[in-house]
Length: 416
Ligand SMILES: [Zn+2]
Image (cartoon, protein in one colour):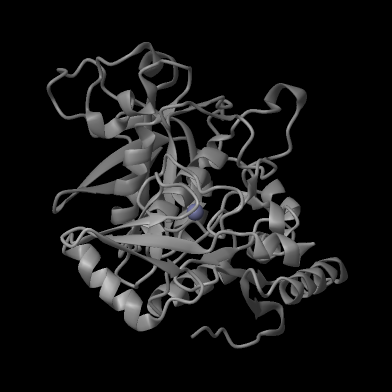
């Protein structure tokens, strides 16, 4: 069945040499490194265009690492094209997101309340880092995007889920453009581009209008209701004694980069949030995301407000380059891939052909595409799933490469 399916697949793309008005077909799977290099050169200088043979509208580009990628996000490859990755909607990151025709999203965002969510808050927080590693997606997502839901919150996006998905989407876009971020600030920039497309209600001004860096306290009913949206790199957690009451006041500071300047915002937080924020700060890089209101709303609208009262806040653990990671193993692995100059992303969608699972990583700088798993837990249940995944990989080696790391056995982390 799979074989028959494969042989009817489109595996070709067509290159038009513009000056000579001449076309040539290449095969994604058979193209030589030489040809890739040549195409990259010609692509950069604008003398060719590349289109997939499955549909003429799908323009392709070739990246600096000689990977052929989609230039357009709008058109998807045909179902019988080898570049068509069949994603399902069953990932926990999908419910509550409604994609509009113009590439915008309307989300049903659950209210977080003031206190941070539980995932990194267990008594055994060092253990929970390991437990959220890899393995089965249902288990891991239980702890992240989809916190235990009651009837009221069903189908709604949690703030944590929003923070994580925006992060992964932004990273995937950078990967598709052929260059991963060098620093968290670069990824934040890409995230801000995505925020423009996210709306809490269909047709409203969206999160961008309420985005803190807009510095526009006059904006929208959204602002009044929920506060300004922020998404920043956590840079400081501290307390100061109030001169008026002699009691401690708690703060977190988050940063982003505008041009070459680092800008920061400070948020007034509760003492319980302070405990939580210290844990975040002490356990590695975090991005913080939430809603806040100007501490001093009476300040003139033209003045730059940098002190806010935090209304809702969550944090996600990120790598040096800003990628969300669900465990320390993931962090180690993702940073290692970057050091090896590999082009990859962390998927937020499930892949139908991968038994509707979500791999920990997808490498897009090789043909065929490589799926990757980080096996972090030494428990029968998880090891059984590890076996299943390895068996799947063997059976599907003609479609996907497979990479894995047995972190639970303290095996050496290695990739070419
Ligand atoms: Zn195609």
